[in-house]
Length: 394
Ligand SMILES: Cc1cc2nc3c(=O)[nH]c(=O)nc-3n(C[C@H](O)[C@H](O)[C@H](O)COP(=O)(O)O)c2cc1C
Image (cartoon, rainbow, N blue to C red; front, side):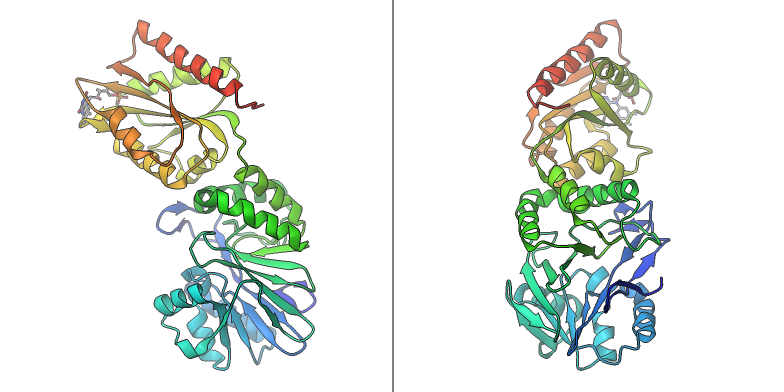
């Protein structure tokens, strides 16, 4: 990617990873990603804000050469995770006078993960400022978005916020700014679901702080820069807010078609009752899509055959993931087919303690669904409709 100027003497100098398809050996990246690093040139000092994944370090150095950077004074480290901090040792090698600027907790992480020695750090505190001459950086500690040491950096004079992972999106695009709002919204929502959702309550407070700063641009560490910050702040306010939608997410698996038959009937039963449905056949689905659907759906209905007493392992995986991501799901139920005996309900219920949801009575059917089973599914749909009335959903 070429160097891109965000404002006079403020550059985006990271790397686009067009081909990457998996993050953290877990998260699918259908649209690639980027590792954004930023260079701020003040009249006295030059600061590099975050670095790039070590696999892309050559590109970062190419950009520094293109900008004829002879001196870096500060490497601002908002987050110690290696896709942003991993190139710090290489930058320090090339620019031995540079100092890593971060707070105490992040310093410990960077020392631990990247073996950067103590003397290379300048340790700052919450709301401390760092003058660059005609420009000033302000640091805002923001723990748990999404590690305990995360921090936001604000370039006061230009009103640019560098929040690292917060507000980011895994999206490889040649657009510097979030001009294709529909595409950016999808990517940012997916990123929020996969990375930020467990920290919803913390983020509420950070959004308030960001609004008080009067930011005019938000430059995250993944994906395009928000030149209209209201776009992403509004989206986040919606996602972290307590409201849920009249939607049912249905992750399911079926080995021989019994569970699938019930799911298909149940989908129609809900649709007839004007409830939106999002089914995910777990043997085919992209788990990122599933995570995204959990951001604001009121209800989760897990459907599974019984396999060796418990739920199918793919269903267990989905339930475990939902539990980790802590969505604001209000109601949960289970649809299950069995052959002789099992403990599907007990095992699934024990897997989702983080979901503070009411469990609606499951539908458990022996073998293939028969005439008297359909009404059980209709009854479950009726119960969901009744509960959704109280959520004031559209
Ligand atoms: C590998 C395997 C293990 C199974 N283990 C159990 C079990 O422990 N308890 C039970 O009641 N049924 C068990 N069954 C039977 C299925 O749960 C039953 O056939 C169910 O109707 C399959 O649903 P499906 O058609 O949606 O795959 C097992 C089936 C398979 C293929």
